[in-house]
Image (tube, rainbow, N blue to C red; front, side, top):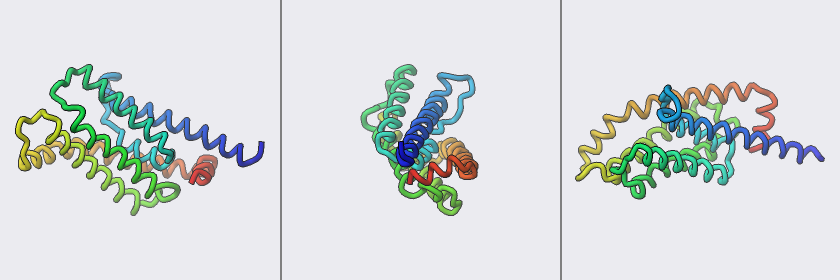
Length: 196
């Protein structure tokens, strides 16, 4: 085996291991009230941007989106949430994860994720955009409000902002610290350079 094949095998192993860890974390935090007594906030957004940075390939994106849809379908069914119109409002929700993945893949890959002036504005944009799209589509399209209007839509967004923004901002801050730690690990940073 030549050096290129060995490097590619290491990269593939690293990608599969990274994907499994991230998929586990999504499952744990997204369904934590079902699986554990901790009730952790959902970390899916931060994990999707990390997956976009490290995994890049669209096959992983499809796998991650399939997991999100499966978890949400399970939660809706087990909690008998028949008031939610899953088909209509859910497209906006799923779009936010695809957008977040692409932001990570296009703008934060490699050493760019270590630049504070780049990472945090993109993180803020990802959180804010995801919040507006996801919660607006839920309010206006899910069918749980009989006659939605703009004024009440703004109130709904304002009332739920802190509960969405603060946990996601903490997760993104934690993610940045992880990137800094990983960058200091010589073997891992050498592999991440070859993956770009």
